[in-house]
Image 1: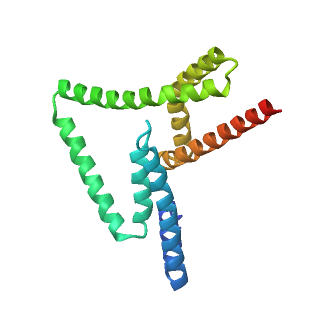
Image 2: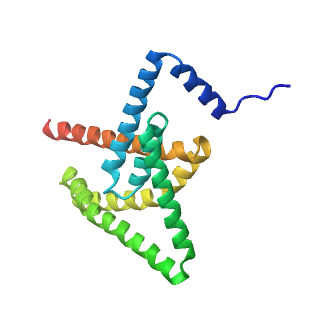
Image 3: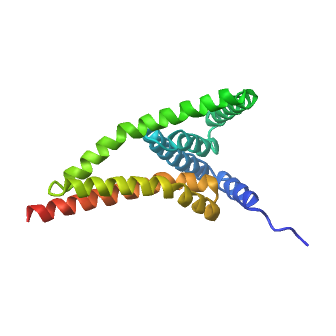
Length: 193
């Protein structure tokens, strides 16, 4: 009895079929280049923000690596450096590991500390007649987001896989930004009327 092809085998066969034709090769390069470029651009925008900015850049690089040799080499170099860093940290004593973890938390905390007043100012500006209520809602929303987002990401990773879940994070962020802009503009129209 023949064994069913795995998803990886089906992907390889599909890509090989596309590459078999000159037009398909060019179209595949263009599509992979655009998708990888979009993911890398989103990752670069997210680097200064707390979150998986670098991970998204590496995911875009992995998309480029499907079709471009230079991206494969850069991805291999990045993977090797990450493995050597992980191995180095693993060889350190517990106090050094705790110090490295604390430094990472300080860097992330600094990012959050710099962004929180800006976001709070925007929320208060959106509701100038009730700044206390706006500040309370912003604090509650921040706490809920920090507490719930890892659980949502884990549930999403269980459904679609970890890599795909991390690729969906920028899409979700863009959706939230669009929704908040829409709500802000609607509020401005209501105020103007």
